[in-house]
Image (cartoon, rainbow, N blue to C red):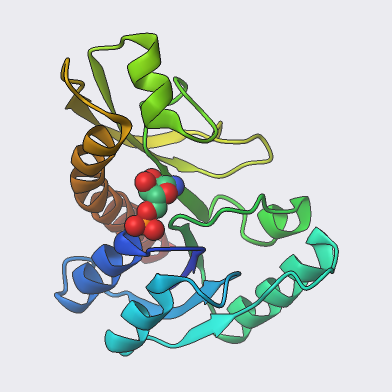
Length: 195
Ligand code: GRF
């Protein structure tokens, strides 16, 4: 399965996926391209070091639909079937979501449906929850609300700051994202073998 990864920043989840695919932990798959909407995203250099093709597709004053149409075209050119959002900070258009039905996934640093949106580690601390974590979910038209694929829990400690909690959640995110992609790829393989 050809995988496309969308990023806007650091790209640590992207690197976790690329490394896992290269190590054969996600069989029969390849990361075909990493696309960033930000030319300054640190993840771009990391992807290049991993020998993965990178593209920068900026919004440049275009509508969301025009911007997404260019991304759809580039992903289709490379036969991408699974789109992984990895710290991609823009909302996707309906057109994009319909272009890859049930094949867009995202990782979010809370146990959804708790704490959707931004600054979620601080939200968890402010709410006083004792457990947070991360969620890998399918992307639909509602923000952080698509069907959940898997979650991993992380204890919230009394002395946690948003940063210390984010760091411990991130450690879990990398393995969770690889596991979710592995499941999706193997389920797709079983489905195609039975046809
Ligand atoms: C992660 O915490 C992810 O859950 C959220 O954005 C952050 C991206 O980090 N959606 P990275 O760019 O993968 O390092």
